[in-house]
Picture 1 (cartoon, protein in one colour):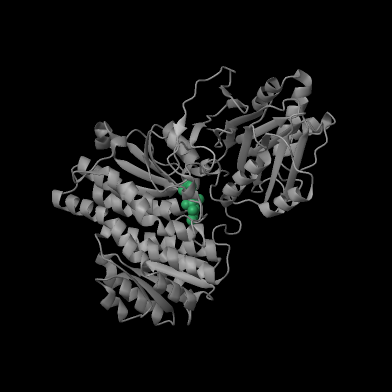
Picture 2 (cartoon, rainbow, N blue to C red):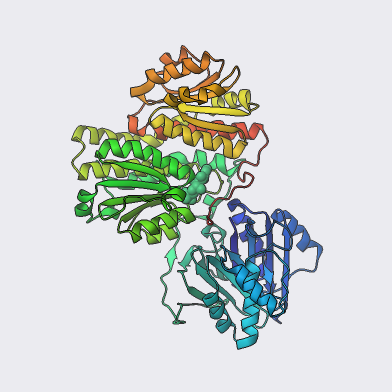
Length: 612
Ligand code: F6R
């Protein structure tokens, strides 16, 4: 979704801003803009609909912007269509103050109407413009920028991360946040604000996370952060482990392909530090034994692909722990009546750690007395900070909108958590435990083996990319996996696709199967392979073309029905989906490539969904 970058430094700001915005492009946007204030207090603003290249052309055509203090924004339209006027930064009618904003101001209409009654003219349809017009209004009233900022923050309701420039303060930028991420970076050339750490990696890896209701005053040489009472705070600085190359394509055609190929390493980094002397050690859960023994129910709450990990977790954890485990869509969970309480554990899964629905579900769970354990990729993100316990996936930055390495690392971590809890609850025998631990350690090499079959995925994709409807079918863990395979395909290739529990087909969906319909049949879950075979026969006898995903142990059974196959090594059933997802990711990737789609930035999608 929207991205913010800001710079207060000794060098020209505009290039820093454009570089930051380029690194934020992956989040999804439809317009972009920058504002810079010169040392003599001239506020310069350029913005435009479309890609950053349009903004760059606009900037090149005119006199260069000069000044070391600036803010930039990529906008993903919510209030008002994507156009030049609605793009950020927004400037007040006096032309003194500029604002970039992520989030939504819920009471913007009420404030807008009251300002209009005072004679203030609005030019855009955005909620953000309300912030800047109100700021100028209070600034005129109080003649002090900080007073005006606090007055605005007291008046607006909703979520915001914002960067503010004022032509009367040409040496500083201000920043404020509530329910939307914003961090401050400390660099040699100056100091930064950003909504996302990837925008800062080429300048600094030392950051501070802003908390709700804090306001920061940032100059080239100093950062001051205040709380809601205007008390100066001592904030902790954090070192980011990701390096800049992790957020670059490194010779790959797409970030998505690069991230798929990074999975052996990402999985290894997530697993191996947590296995010590043949035991799964989750330091993060140290001292929680009493609580764990009391857990009588688990909810796994997430959105999109992370929810699909939750579906894998439902089958796996329920089987391992013998307690009810439910996977819930965060957007539904928060408005339903889940059975929360002290003995319920809520597991929230999120790559970004900022997904609004997941965050809201987390808060609801905590409010109702449950403990929340999150599985998160981005350090210091809101979900990580608000959870009782956090397990980090060490996937590194994920730039492609369609998740791949975050999904696999979430899945291995959830499986590890399940096995860890099973041991704590004495629900797993030593032999089974040891076998799974050994299996976990072998996964990175086996993922490499599956990745070696690129030619096969490419060849099969090149035969089917013209289909306009695809069904994924599977049972148990294969059903959970099919959900992800189907989502990967539809989001990047725009092919309509559905995923069904294979046993459900007969209850309606099979009427859609006709000669030539493409069915991807998942048959990797060993206990149910025979049953999956029957489902393949069912759809084939109605004319479907079938691509099967199966293992080297069951390939002979499946090959009696189809010759189009993705074959992966057979491993323990609970680890099988970790390998199974790889061909599905690559199949979707190559289909989208054949169709000429914008793979890393599919239409209408944003990497991190910070609105409801
Ligand atoms: C799909 C995808 C999304 C995310 C979902 C949750 O490829 O990436 O479905 O999984 O938006 O995002 P996080 O994990 O950041 O909470």
